[in-house]
Length: 273
Image (tube, rainbow, N blue to C red; front, side, top):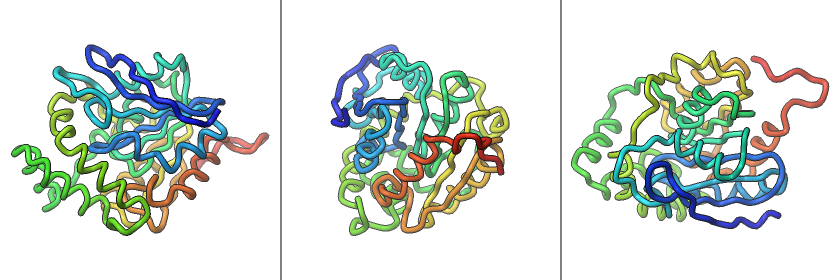
């Protein structure tokens, strides 16, 4: 089966998470970034579902998931998704904040993760430099200006613009989620005591680290930190891509993910730097 079907599942504590599943085989969970939703993976999920059981969902308050009215954790939500789907162990693929959730979840529940793919990932504990961009984001969040937040997202993170592949969907997704993002982030709580940046050496699962040539420069800094810090990590830079790799270069990304999910050829050891 490769056709995706949607369902609403209970979110921990309250509300509902909108979930999509497709395919059969070893499970793979796709996590989107802040201000996005599961449509981020529309051009990649069908190819992955030819070989795997692919699970993707709208994070709390985004897309078709219900908005929070109390504190919640993305790590706890991911665990609830796995439990609902009857998945004991899965490969996790996360973009941006989704990548940060993947890292936090792996550190909290290492026995439930077979591999990681960190796509244009952020990193808990990484200190971002003070720049006009970060200042503008902070101001938009403090003032609750959803329109300004969406405009910043498109100008800073979707640098290739509307005419590049996936541009129309990126613009629609970001605009529709801007107000929801402000509400959701107001109730988001981190994993207590976590600092993934200082704990990367604890991760044993094989990791693929990817970023685009046109992404924010700090994403390349984080990618280098992840590749060097995780014991079994392999990094690649994808041309013609900004932060939205799954919509900008879906065929190339799908090919890299499938190769990573397949693991090393039989008889060969896992990848090492």
